[in-house]
Image 1 (cartoon, rainbow, N blue to C red):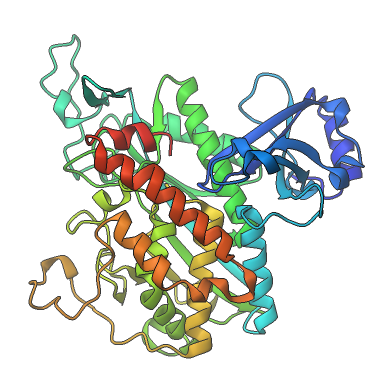
Image 2 (image 1 turned 60 degrees about the vertical axis):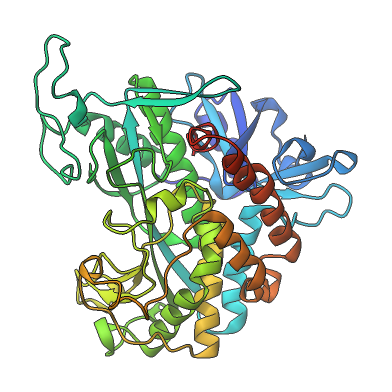
Length: 474
């Protein structure tokens, strides 16, 4: 399916599809998709330049109330028909601007991603970065939580979970998924095949190419749908569509989806392994004759990721719950090492194809609670810093890292153990992210302030269910 690229084409597209409403979407600092809707007659060619106003003081981590007026400008190349809503609705993804200076807003995550792509080009290192995220999620049949003065609790359920094997409900047909055994039996054990297929069909309606879908390792409905890689900002746009469609299709079928990193104790959490490679003039610069078929540039890029990972985690793993996932033994890489084929290392070099076009690295630490624009941007900035500084990635760790003793792992750096530790690392060592004014000091300062005040302190002072209150809607 072809989609419009210019304002004139967008208006023609809207008429062709008999659109009733236009939905303007943008991403807030923490990664939530926000939206404002207008009747379609409000959208004109001038709208793409003039923009639409909104209250920036009501968006988390953005404007003070005395400077609340902001505008959003639609990107015509993002026009899609919403596959979920009953009335024909045109969706346009927007960038955020100051209404007085007309300058792009420094805390607009999409603008940060675009600046990172432009910075790559300005260095001469490459002209495009390809990104392929794998965002996992849970599908529950029941979710309840409360954090109050007199009680705090959370309660989840899934019809296919192993704890329902002894349910007295009639009929109980068995076929439950035991802990860590969800990867990946056929139906009837896998009860979510049709649901995932419906999600895939909706994703393809908005131009997202689906490569595969399957049940994931955990019990209680953990799933994954793999999207084809793309350039960085369009890929982040697709992650936002992905979360939106997956959650809403599930809701239509009577399920509830969460991208919360660790909603379930005692089984695997949800990661967002992020594949990446740099290209120039149509050539993959990560392909070479070194370890794992990588080039010297790719090894330097790995060195940058490994060096800056303790600080990056504040953005790639941005919730207190993220660090419930980053524990040994659950396929969550806590050791900052690289290896080919090895899913216990934080950086894996996929070896599924010998084609130079397929050469890439997979950073396995991030999780899907992150803001995809900021997460992809800071990973690129860390890797480029490694290329520019010719960082040594060290030796690969070609072992099952989870089987190694503490003594054997003594010299291997670790991911932070908690969000406040990651925030402290970011505060101390974020110079690499400031290059090219990609991530501004203003954004870093607000990120640290918001995360500490609204999340770290909130969870520290409240019982464990506070994480469900804060993060279930991830």
